[in-house]
Amino acid sequence: MKILNSKIIGNSEKHIIILHGLFGMGDNWKSIALRLSNIGNTVHLIDQRNHGKSFWNDKISYELMSKDLFEYFNHFKIKNAIIIGHSMGGKTAMKFALDFPIKVLKLIVVDISPKKYNSSHGEIIEGLLKINFDKVNSRLDVDNYLLNFIPEKGIRQFLMKNLYRLSENKFALRVNIKSISNKINNYYDEISSDKKFLKETIFIKGELSDYIKLDDLKDIKILFPNAKIEIVPNSGHWIHSEKKDYFIDLVSDLLKN
Image 1 (cartoon, rainbow, N blue to C red):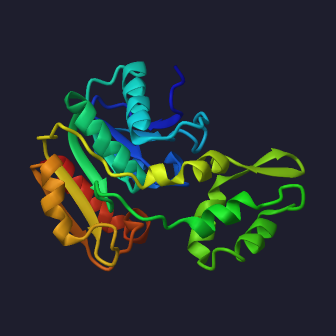
Image 2: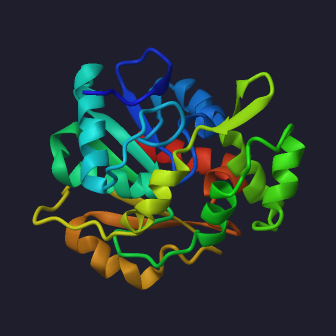
């Protein structure tokens, strides 16, 4: 069994697991992990399958990603933890909490709901798939190429964190874009279960984001009866980067309760 790659920050007996979103990696959350470790937590920045430095696998589903996390808990002998998941990571976190509730002390889901979503990453996938790494010699070359598909500079910068040097003269991607492209609809799947997660659950919504709608709460409560929604003002989907200080203060308060 392959174990997910992670960066572990802190040495407390109180564990926090952070799960990144699609095309991301645990390292995106390093500055937040440092802040949370400073208030007495051990923070695990997980790379989910096909992302970061974790293993690649053509099989992609939230059931499998939940099991990946279970194996991670067993490997590091983690009895239980608070789980924070953003977007895709939020769906993995929800599935894990429903599958293995004894392992989860509290669930914090960032700007995603259990419902099925429509495809929204077509241009990103097309751009990443079509990069010709035999013809790009610098990050600027990649950025200029991706501009043809992705006009938003912030999104391009986020995606280019996946670039690394395979050799002195050649770049490669850490994200397994081919397998993700083939199974992209699996990432939009609904999270379902015949069980309920009865512990405290907080959904953090960006005020300007439509990933969570306020009328989703009634459906959320079917699986998570004790769920509540916290709204971060003037924030879109990337709450943890757009409103970092506000987000850290909010999560720190939630951890105290």
